Amino acid sequence: MILTVLRSRTVRRRVLAALVLFGFAIGSSLFWNEWRVDWPSLSINLLAAGAGLLFLHNRWRIKEARAMTPRKIKDTFS
Image (cartoon, rainbow, N blue to C red; front, side, top):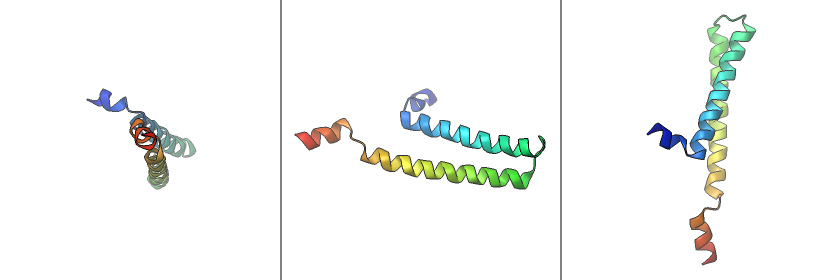
């Protein structure tokens, strides 16, 4: 089931974006605090990564809604 869901380009894009954003949020927090967990810094970074993911999701959703699909092309040119 998961493999069939990950075949979708939109889902793969969002999963990859989430992994990159949250990975860098956690990594940068650990790097700048000498590999110790600093909860306030980590929380701020995770909140910023979540906001970035939400922004990207909404932006991509709008673009995907406007994209030409075979059905829209058929309706337009028939």
